[in-house]
Amino acid sequence: MTGPAAELPALGIDIGGTKVAGGVVAPDGTILATARRATPGSSVSSTEDAIAAVVDELAEAHGGELVGVGIGAAGWFDRTGDTVLFSPHLAWRNSSLRKDLTARLQRPLWVGNDANAAAWAEYRYGAARGAYLALMITLGTGIGGGIVLDGRLRPGAHGVAGEWGHMRVVPDGRLCPCGNRGCWEQYASGTALGQTAREVARTSPAAAALLLERVGPDPDGLTGEDVARAAAQGDPLALELVTEVGVWLGQGIADLAAVLDPEVVVIGGGVSKLGEMMLGPARERLDRALPGRGYRPGPRVVAAELGPQAGIVGAADLVRQAVSEGTA
Image (tube, rainbow, N blue to C red; front, side, top):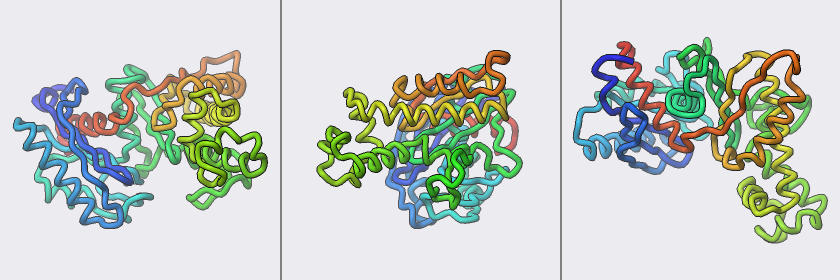
């Protein structure tokens, strides 16, 4: 990237179901200042108010020239980024978010999916630096992700590439909120970790005794976070459940490798905090399930380096790139 925009900080905004988080990001990926507001997800206008408040606070705090605003949000965007087709946790439905915010903020703007922004951040500054073809897999309540190929973010023909979580891995399996059954995110996500723990606790309370000590006698209180904490403390059942999620993760990566042949797969999102407890079994499963194993290289599977700030950093860099190319 060259030109004046390459030398200026940009604002990055990451919009989730509970918060609008923003940061002033230097060209080297360093976050210089942060701000946040609660996300009023049931109201489009109130969500836009929260975005504008974060932008105004950061612009005032920074005091210097800013190249523009990059916004990453959980949802499906069209290829141009002009329209939010659907957002599962927010009120946007075929909403002209870019047009509305450009008029309101009066700044150059990039708008797109938050996992795409995180993928770009890991390519530019993190675990996928320099990779020819990098995939990002974000593990949280569900599974999302992004594709960077030959130095460009690739959102797909309609803007909705990277929704790995809805590959069907178990015919007639668990019902997914998307309406299908057996989706990958029902077996390899934070939601899956909690659901499997609850199933075990209902059928065998004795085996889940240590887990149930954390929430009381009702298995319905168990969450993926409870299992993760128990696994970190050595609970045998929790470790077994984390291993199972890792195995499903590795199987899905093998399926993606069969189609896309990535150089590196970066694992981010909240569930990635499980680290090698999950990534070790994932790599072992990948080694066994990779098509043509023994005769072809497989992808490296690595933990994300930028953590929860990746969306902010990536969105800021994407608006900087858009300004440099004259597309913002």
